[in-house]
Image 1 (cartoon, helix red, strand yellow):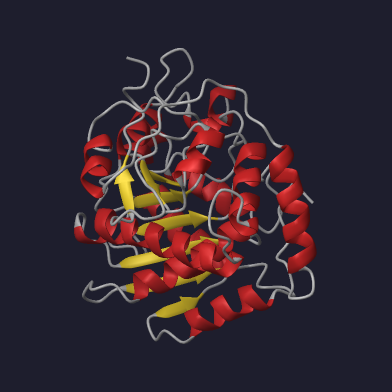
Image 2 (cartoon, rainbow, N blue to C red; image 1 turned 90 degrees about the horizontal axis):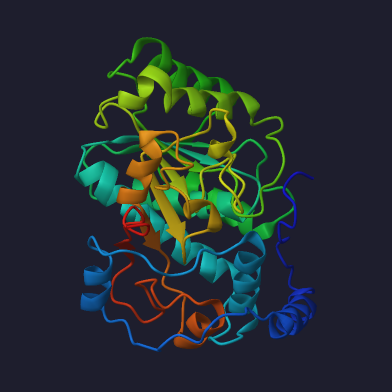
Length: 337
């Protein structure tokens, strides 16, 4: 599988074993760094930290992001939580970012959520329901979920919740490709879908995109490069959950001389990943949309405890498990000042 190290969903009979293994792995994981000064982050502090201040914290590698997720599942440095609980919180909080940034601020009502086969896709299903239930007049949500839930009872339940919403419709690849190509070929501001949410691949993605995702990823890339790069955000708006699909979490493929998907908005879950570290590096960033991603970047997901921040060096992330806010802007463009 090209989704390397993608954690499989634990069944009822495997949760105990998976938790024990994750706890042992997490206990063995050590990150070498200077111990930061511990500080409590209140809602007011979080908003101040996320409003134009430079981010001086760490960027998680794929291995670290996986270890952190396992800590959450096993209760290492935090209260133990189920995968369902984590997914519902991440998807709902990311969804509220999209409601505020795309719906309320820009007037988008027609959304298409692109869901992959792993946990990122599960977050996308929760996000779709959050959009459908938002207080946006005339909101309509399309969901592309080509792999479906497979044998996962959790994914099947999340899919059923989407199907229960009268303003959510599952669509096929032809619909998504046509909707994106209408923007690429004619810059059609009257296209049915004006906001696309990428929940295809998360931090475990490596290698090349494979079927059935190739054509959609090519269209997403085309819709965010060339002439489309200057499209009015009220006509076409793209969002990526955690990392832009197709990027290597440990090093932005957009630096390699090939076109890459460049969303208008990047929502990091829990903490920024390593591919975000060079978004505003003039020596590497070839595209002004990368700088814009750095400036508009948001962190969502209230999971971190002080103990986890100690372990992973994330004290500059402006959210904690007891935060009264769901997300905060974290400007990455000033990191290199």
